[in-house]
Amino acid sequence: MFHSTLLFLLRVLGRTAITLSLIAPVLAEAQSIHKAVKNIVLVHGAFADGTSWSKVIPILEADGYHVVAVQNPLP
Image 1 (cartoon, one colour):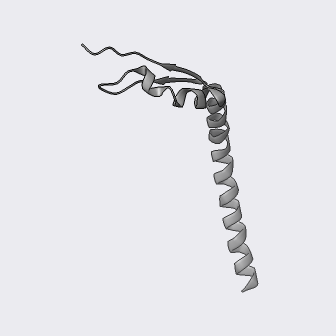
Image 2 (cartoon, one colour):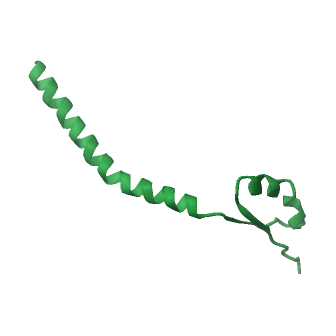
């Protein structure tokens, strides 16, 4: 009984190690992309303008982002 339980745990650990070795490069790339992105473009909705983002922009800039609120004129 102990022997079969030990074999089962070793198989589970082996599969977990293989899964982690496959996922680790993907996670590392995702983290490097996240660190590289520092620009945010905010677009207002209908019947508004870029000043509607005036309270959000300082919060994002304090976190280190470069923020632009576009002025999209209505026709």
